[in-house]
Image (cartoon, rainbow, N blue to C red; front, side, top):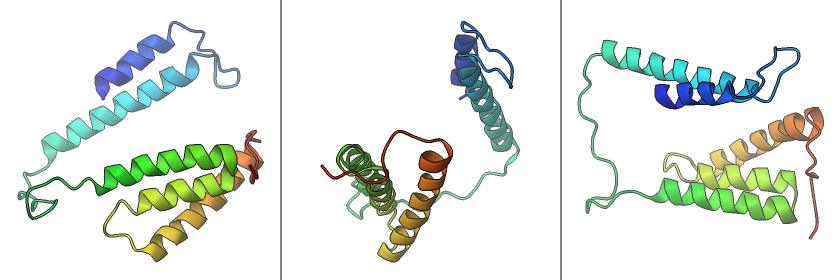
Length: 142
């Protein structure tokens, strides 16, 4: 993480960085790279200071097969967002990606996934449609 973050900072310096009030095209990659490098350093420091934990019980199926439910649900959620974003609008696409991805965790119930999807859809409407004026309609038919 540290190396990728430093690489992003280095790549961002090829562009004009600017200031906080007048950001240039290199500001975002440099800032994100710096945060990524800082996060990597914090993770490394916490890993060195932590006591070794007991080994976690094996997850997955009893037959030894890996549990791919989470990966499949996340990929299906992204595909649903792409399709519904194009044909249905922001609100159905956001609901679908959160709902399908939330089902990837075996601890989530259908009710929890629906409540999370409703909450994230409301946040997406406020942030992306209202505050940022994203050029994606809330609903699109066809």
